[in-house]
Amino acid sequence: MRNSKENGVDRRKFFKVAALGGLGISFAPSFMGKSIAQEVKDGKEPAKPKTNVEDALKHPRTATSMPGKYPAKVVRVNHQNAVVDNKPGKKAAAEMLEKAMLSLTGAATLKEAWLQFVKPGEKIGLKVNPVAGKSLTTSHAVTQSIIAQLEDAGIPRKDIVIWDRREFQLHETGYTKENYPGIKITGTERKDEEGSYYNKEGDLYSLEMIDKDWYYWADVDGEYDEYTLPYMVNEGKYSYFSKICTQEVDKIINVPILKNAGASITLCMKNLGYGAITNTSRLHKQLWGDTSAEVCAFPPLRDKVVLNIVDGLKGCFNGGPGANPQYIINYNTLLAGTDPVAVDRVGYDIVIKKRIEKGVQEKDSPRGRKFMEMAANLKLGEHRLEKIDLKEINLG
Image 1: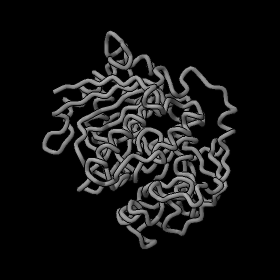
Image 2: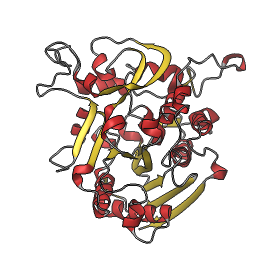
Image 3: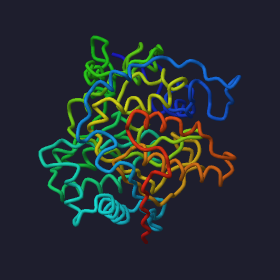
């Protein structure tokens, strides 16, 4: 029976290397094969690999399709005491979330606000982001506040699912049954009780979690060695959607972190696009932005993600999407909206301004916003800052 240690690679070491770009899983983005800072030769972009995004557009839109109930509207709540002793505060997080929900919806009560997006009897998936480890995971202060407010709105814990791509990362960052009793914690990539990704026949357990009826096809091959394959699930030109989002949950609340990816960001769309499908390493070099936008155009995400809540209590401005301690910062903010493109656009400005302030980059680059323009063209939301209705609230 094979597992990551038997194959000569420890999972923590694997992801430490991956975060630095060695395995192409979570390195800084490149658009059309070039880094944002690199000039395009002769002023021309190379031809991009074809994808099946047109298949996504064939499916009729629904009442819950992106950009959702409040297109082009974003609420930003700031709280000067959001982080105490380097830890996001539960009281502040709950207050920030309440103000955000009431301002976004205009509802008279918090329960009414939540019931605009979810209903009792539905399975609600919370898509968190534990990729960078304990130092920069979606904070428990924010996640627990969401759960408490969902419960008050009539959603029982048994109908709430916390999920991400890699189940072990959820566990390592504190998303466990002990910390979240009564709530299902699950991931697409999983192991048996002995810590192996493979069954006795040599097949990956994760293959049971993919839905081959839903996939993102791109004309780029994924070929992986035995160390990398368990984390990609499959090779080839197909990236399959997780059954978590295609079959298990009815609605998705997206809870990313306010952080950078090179001279761009990894917020709403990146958290969804790369978190919901397999075989993603192949997509980073030539299709980083395309993947972030196009995967969100498929119904399992487009029609189910009803709310985006960006955890900006703590975040980073460089070294993301991993967690380099010297670049982690207390943004003391929370963003909320149904429009993932608009929320990403507002979050982008926050991160890029901090990068310029800290001398990481000299000025904004339109290439860093390219994926948002792609998403807007797919009718997923608003990418023009001047068209976004931003409501800002200051607390504390």
